[in-house]
Image (cartoon, rainbow, N blue to C red; front, side):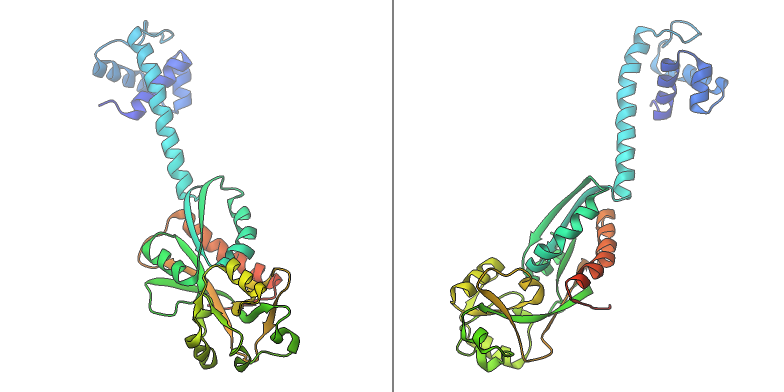
Length: 301
């Protein structure tokens, strides 16, 4: 079997036209290069050079030079690819995220992450916390950004920040006109619309209201459209209320401990890819800086 380094030695000599220059490029002695060429000719069963001066090739040598260059180029590209993957410069990352983070944080994060990683492909899955967790647990997503899991999970959760829940309603509704903090009793006649984010609320007053609710909407755009129409009210975290449509307002709740904790989800039972490891480190470093500008509260692990 012809070894790659033997082939590389032959190609270098053929391109240099002499053993001395080739030996310098290869950082080997001339005698070692000559011995390698003799062994190669013995193995292929024919002469590769017309003369001992190595300045011209035989037809067999010309054919080996053409095919040898291709093999060396393919091998070098493969090795470069392996190094690039190991250094998180190429690869594929699937990120699952709750809509509020996908809309308000991810657009500021991804461009900076891929700036010096043009070979990295990223897929963003925009869904609610439960499905973010399922995506990470199943391996469909490498990482997830979502609310704290409500039940036991195989995924690791690293808290990033927290934001308060707010009542989202039409600007002309009675709640908005009252101009005060919203009590649970105020929502009894408003037509509460449940959603994936509000699933995490465990306040007794909210639980009692949610048991009577008859509508569940996962999509934030649809939730806001329904609130704007006056069909009902819903509860969303502050980050989801950063850029509300016209005639939709976010009202504060009277109950104090109405927080959503958002964190980074990853599988704890598998070895992540280099690009996933790099993105995790990037998120843990950059998200706290970003959420401070939005007035959100950092949560220490």
